[in-house]
Length: 319
Image (cartoon, rainbow, N blue to C red):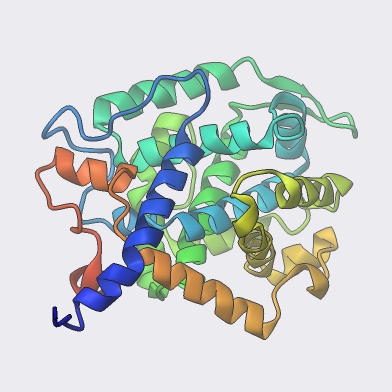
């Protein structure tokens, strides 16, 4: 009879889940018709963000990345010019899954991609944005490459991803949260967001400055309904998908929620919040070997589990 140690038992339990999540992550990031990206090459090429950064550790978690991405879009849709640009010039309404795939891949490339490839991708986004312009329903002209709009989009993304991990996975503290903003500064400048905040305090100041700018819109609720019904996760995991969306609403700054009309029923109850934290912590311990994070570790000669385990958890406190 084979005697199983304590370390073997959790591994046997997690292996089927690890395999399923790994395959699902690959599908979510693979846009039909696009070229597959191999983050493991070229060997030795660094990324825009350092491997020992807080960003490398938080972007490996698909649950908090999903939560943070939804929260960022809620904040973007509350800004009238950004809302018009996103809603009129993107495929959120017609093909939300494809839009999420493209956005998710852009985030992964910005953090984990080899520097040259990341810079080329960002340059392509900037060129596409240069063709996006129009007028809001209130008659205000907008252009996607307007620096103030880019600053807001970059800031909401940094807030969403950092705060989702901080709230639902591991506490980062204000220093760790600030570090995420600082680590995104190079990419923000490449996108044209030269004034994006580089600290948690800078984010709070920018958010405060938007008090007279953010406004309610039925598009926010339309977006949440689309995300709840879109086939992002398999049918068996659809309850988790809706929990993630509610978690995104819950972490939206309270005054913004009130301003756009997201009442308590759109957020999380105490038990739901605890469940989402459990899911976030569980996934954070699972090595997704086909993920951009692990592929990028291989590119730099690091073991697949470099971003996982006690050593990685301690780095959040040291950040």
